[in-house]
Length: 308
Image (cartoon, rainbow, N blue to C red; front, side, top):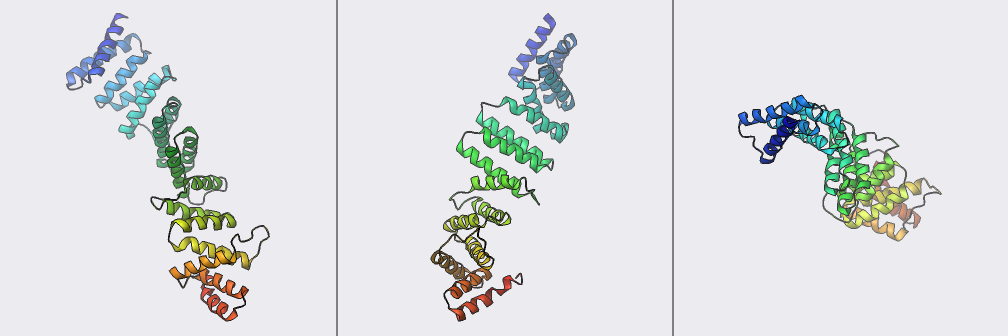
């Protein structure tokens, strides 16, 4: 056993000094590790040293084999898993995407108390799922990340990443639509910077798709306070028109006629040919008995029916 101890001692010293400059020194170091492995092929530290040395020498397959063997010897020790993660990041071709995902999934168990490492590891795993064309798995990872984080800023960023991931999915299933809504609601803020406007646009479309028209109007009001754009105004006018044309007891338009008229005015000042704006204005005039003016605006809004 003295040979094993001496070999490990020399290996540890070489690693500490990062003495990888000469191939002869690498070979001498590997010779010591081979002695250790020969005496005890289940020596965890020897496998770690051997795996690290092979990485430095460019022998990536040998490094992977040694580190994988180490994880089998002591699966609850993080060092070998961390070594594999580093190897996969630096040399992505050494492992399949599925193997890399398994490694990072296992690594998650060892980063419980370090917020930065938790964030980084979960995001790397989510990216691996995305690269593997599995956005739903990536979304599940990001949703778990939200619950694992404590810092408000990181949590908000995780919600935004989740929203971005789910928004990019075509034909999102009914099961995942509430998850997207939740992510978007946590991503919205009062800033005019970044992706906030895009998040608002996606949120309003989602509310319309799911029939939440009252909530849509209120969200559009908030958006209109932040962004000087026609989009939220057009949504308000559209819902006003639809709920007046097809009344629904469960969903009454939430704004007063005075508030609605102000939004219509703002929309038509931006785009006087807006179909939804003109239809809404025509309905307002019709309710007020101003039929000539109502007819003129309703005629301008007719292209909605023709899908203009």
